[in-house]
Length: 412
Image (cartoon, rainbow, N blue to C red; front, top):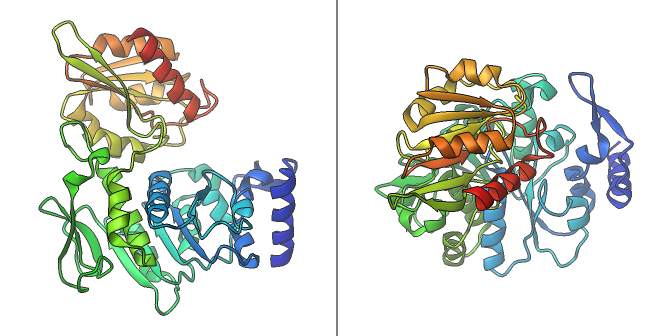
């Protein structure tokens, strides 16, 4: 059966045939060409490249994979970001120019995968997402956990996420594999984290002694991962710690890797300031595109990056069964106006009325942007962080972000 899956994947990779159907847990069809576009099992039968790193998680996969790729590239390796981003693995794996593949894996791809034996692997976090497809959080987590199976060098896990931590220590790995936890708090033995404004390693991967605190770099050196006032984006710092643990766990040059990480700029539609508008009193209003935040967990991380009562928050779209309860404390602290943008805003309006001072319901980008501009005050950020999928009004989250940016440039 394994070789049959391999031949099927190769056929799909070459022909991009969309006709094959695979059945979800909920009984609906899932396009086979999308499910197998990456086909990690393909790697079992291909001799090149010799080194493979994979990243999965509910949020942070793309940023972490891109950071990993940039650091390894700076170390002189051909290490493209592939899979769920960039080129399909079934194409990249047979390119002799590649030294390392940095692979972003979705839960859908992992669901159909059974034979991974990666050099390094990470789970950034696990929160409710795509549960309608997977049939519940336990199935979703079990599919994510496949990335840890038989890891050879470095298993990197979110030590602040209890579910991920349990999966990490339950995983069957190669005997020499190191388990490295990352945390935004002070690290414990075997972890990399943050203390007194420094990235600190207690795992031994950064050159210090395992179990002893070793200062790696000042957090403020990573200017692209912070607000203009120096406030750190917690979720991007977590992604940076994950990527750093992966590349150092692989054995990359620490100084070259850190230099590349300090220059890293997150990709489009991830907490990206697209414009700064001046107000009549000399103040400014920032417009921030975080359209990639398609679930409540991602939106919570974004809201946590801003000053209290400084956010006009644009949210809404195709709800994915979101539980908004964990978001409410952050919204109450950070948001003074919520602008709901979607064809069905009833759930958002119901959940956040009384949580934030003002809740406005709109059914188009134009109406949402007009309401947001009117509500914004000097010093505010107008934050597009929808917590929902985009398919009610837009082609995809990229289209949503681009139209947001276009509106701002033309009318703000």
